[in-house]
Image 1 (tube, rainbow, N blue to C red):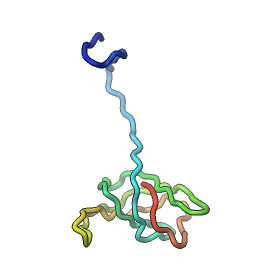
Image 2: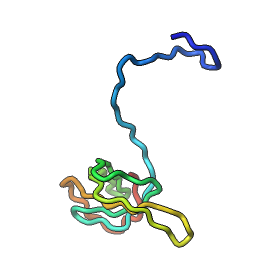
Image 3: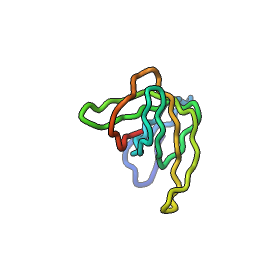
Image 4: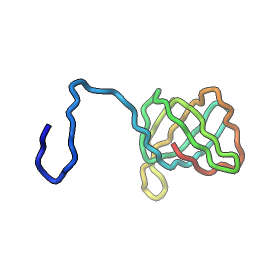
Length: 104
């Protein structure tokens, strides 16, 4: 397909759509971290039953697989709207002390 304009590289049109996934990293504040449940605050809403990965920082940083159980908007003291997300971990032990934040 020949296209005019500022783009000089070749572009292609797919005959059949292809499904895929995009990983978007966004900082979160972890409110609670239990063996089977994580509650966190983040800027983006999550869909129920969405499968996510949470990276927990620290001297022994780790990544946990989880499923979104609930996502609700909350208004913070400064007027910012965040989303409180409750995750159910996928069987991986998730206990840690003093965790302040992570990446979703």
